[in-house]
Image 1 (tube, rainbow, N blue to C red):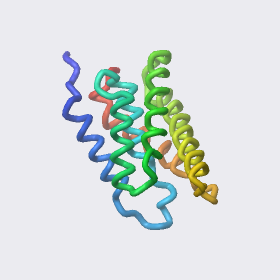
Image 2: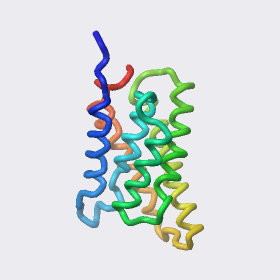
Image 3: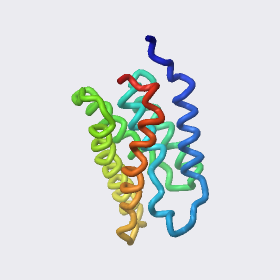
Length: 156
């Protein structure tokens, strides 16, 4: 059985992730919003590295900076670091399954949030609340669903 070509699904999934990122949610849940684009980036770097890599991460970060109105370079820096480390991890970790990649995804999401926190601190506007780390929990809870939906286009 031939593997399915993800060339159409990858941009479509990134568009869906961008729309989920921009979708309005109640203020009580805003801190829990998962890092949709980051999750999709990690999934595709793990499963389709021929299609998605550091340059895709840079482009996604720029697009997210533009649509979110955040400081220029905030998301590209974190996305590029995550894509590079995800690619390095995918070359070393050859065990299939969403649990292992989920643990790596949580660590990479924590890294992305830490990079953004550091850059915001350098810019002089550090977040003043512990709730800055809550998207990590939201992303961890959503990872099995995202992984299960997109797994048919993965390499496993």
